[in-house]
Image 1: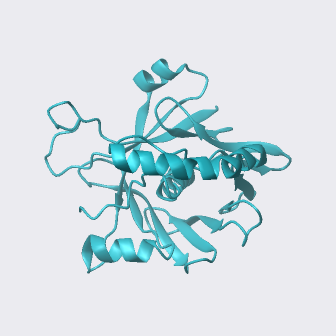
Image 2: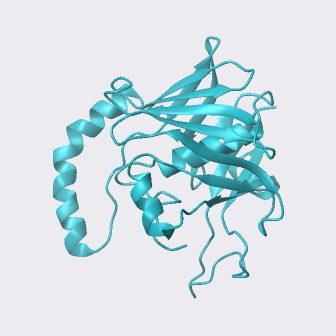
Length: 239
């Protein structure tokens, strides 16, 4: 069955209250839903797949943010929001600023589930390349953004510089982010598709042969590399 997987951040009310109670539980959720459903139906029928949390080093959030500038990412995907069971983990096997980064997805007992490699633009080609290598499965390769929209983005870059000044003076507004849609192909067909959905980017998974731990980890990694104008879920200084 084709599914959609996405990261849901907590909703905030006009009074500044989050959709989840402040009881120490995790407010972020990774949802999964049938890809054939319409947006509203998908949100209503979606089920929580995992609850992500970054793993902080001894130096806390500040040290984590310094390490992530080098490409380091360390996550745990909990099976429930109160951390009673682990669904999967994501660790960094190698990373250096300006170079490719290799992440490993681990199962509950520490077994390797997949390797995910991110090669930055110019290192991996004109566009950032993501390679997903499931243990015992076919390798899928995807490149960030459509070449046409990349061309449009570069053409509009000088105009965005003017917008940036206006946004800074007005204190509101958004710049146009870099093209982010990514399609992975394996065996001559598209197996994964990271594209804009109803309120958030979503990963469309071609069939249920994909381990949900791998697709959930990929969503987290993609969202944590949202680009210079994006808002990464794991990049804040607050614990």
